[in-house]
Length: 129
Image (cartoon, rainbow, N blue to C red; front, side, top):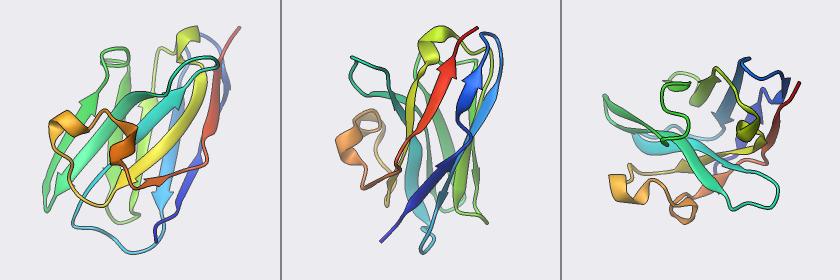
């Protein structure tokens, strides 16, 4: 069983920055997919970013809406990921959920939440002046 603990949400002004972190408890996985989804009020959950790894090979992926502004990273030793969010906009306001799949997803499966095995409880990010 894997549990995900998220941290780092909060209130930030437009143009500001926040870093979200997600640590996975339990055993480490040589292969896996870990990422972030978000859900704004009245909207469907959407993919934000993810990192896939298999052995020493790692790939990072971003939705078009955050590409160039968000940066995902993985800390193998801590079994965790983080996302540095810069140039935040009001439309980034949402509850952000960490998700984990205990295998390396193929690219076409990356965007769908149902392909992930474990989820965090979510952390609120509010971008407002």
